[in-house]
Image (cartoon, rainbow, N blue to C red):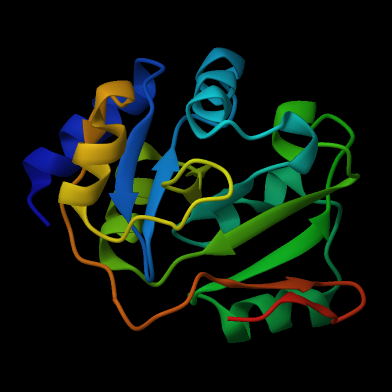
Length: 185
């Protein structure tokens, strides 16, 4: 991925923008998770209720840990064994995590992505970003930059080019405490 594209996407994130970017399976929509206006704008674009919560994606566990309740050594080892991968974990979070991220829950959905573009983006940005599928709620997720541009480009500040794996499914979601799979890949 060109450094110019990563820099441009990061500039948009820092300016409160909403961007689209490739992930392992589909294009994602993202913004600064701590910018309430950006998050609510993203939710409006998707027509998604805040009560559902959002996923945060990062380049490594250290970018997420400050949001989470303390992890046991076994939990940290499980996460580090699985990640980076298209596996999202639901983990209890600190009370200070904004409602617009956790929704009606006392937990937060987080993932360390194996996608090189997501890795570069989060490293350059210096932290996690929101990661929700690029689509209107209830519609199929978009898998290419051109599809995102056609269907949603009018509402976005930047579409980061890159490839997804057309055979891959959206990330599996697991509950870290119970081990239960909440959504299969």
